[in-house]
Image (cartoon, rainbow, N blue to C red):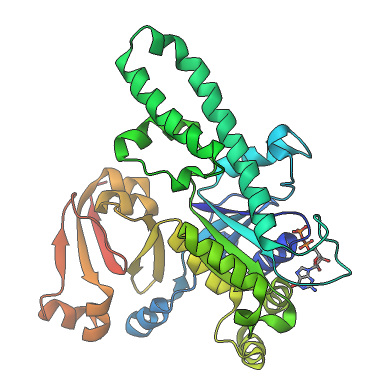
Length: 365
Ligand code: GDP
């Protein structure tokens, strides 16, 4: 499955946020393929389309799709030089698909800031530089390893070297790999390096409990937004403390509390949706009377691969997929009417599944 790592300096609110995530917790029995690990929190992806489908199909059970947040605590200045538990943490970041970078935007004199004052830009730079140093190290090692082959005139090694040097130059300027324009061919050369700064990233501004409704007047949030815009990154504003409180509530209590706060949804739900998008994921549905369920695939996945998310047998024995786009099904109000309107399609192996497709797979066993 896909995962998003939570990073940030100490005392910015990562644990508070991560506790809210595990508290809000998905029913893990529904997600047997997810990791069981204290540092991994499974979150259900809120999707209002599930409610509409439930009204149409009236199933016994509804299962949202899910993905994992990984708590990567302990990233400190000097991590790339092995300070703190440096390398270990960088290793954990290597394993996630995207990064949510928590930035402290709340003032509280009782809570020490590692750098002595709340300064989002400096925090962002500190974390980003550690990641860049680690990547620079990976690239340098690789350059050393292929040096002899390059010297001997090996063409492919020379191509690889060109990419590595392009990245190295960026790292030395304090730029992340994300900011370097690379074509598919160039990306292929560096895939095995599992660079940290090539992973998509979003910023999470952690604001004070009483600051969620006027976040736009918070100068720290403004600073983060401007910085993020310059990198083309997303920003999600939350109050980790408030999220921890929301996560303890369910159903009507939760709705009432959100209403009191003047919110239509929790910050955690906003973060989950932003992270899902950042991971490049889309959702398709299966809708039977037993179960209406959302499934996650990577954008661009073809029908057999999508079937394989449900079961490997579905992929191996794939014959065809029956597909109705979500909008068409909702407009029609039933599968039968959608069929009459010609909105029911048969698709083969090459079909690229679209977000919102309601699918039924035919397969050989
Ligand atoms: P971590 O080191 O990044 O995991 O940070 P923690 O989640 O442990 O938070 C550090 C301290 O800041 C704890 O005492 C939290 O209760 C506090 N904290 C976290 N978020 C907020 C917030 O939004 N407002 C205030 N006042 N304190 C917060």
